Image 1 (cartoon, one colour):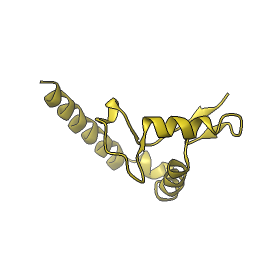
Image 2 (image 1 turned 60 degrees about the horizontal axis):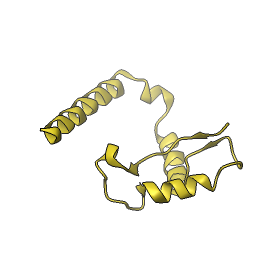
Image 3 (image 1 turned 60 degrees about the vertical axis):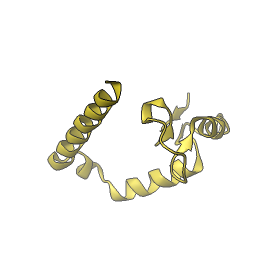
Length: 90
């Protein structure tokens, strides 16, 4: 089995955010991710996501991510995103 752990990919779920150095189009991501099949058990799917993930792990420790301030920030971000989605659906 292989686990694919992408970061930001431009899809309907991400409001089709513009492709850039950090954000892959769905087609480009799928092509890159398929090239990793059989080589590793865990992958970010593409080189740019692997590099981003590496630096995020350096910056964000488990202790920081599980802290109360980070939990509160995540909850607020989720509320804001849900509000934005509701507004776009109206």
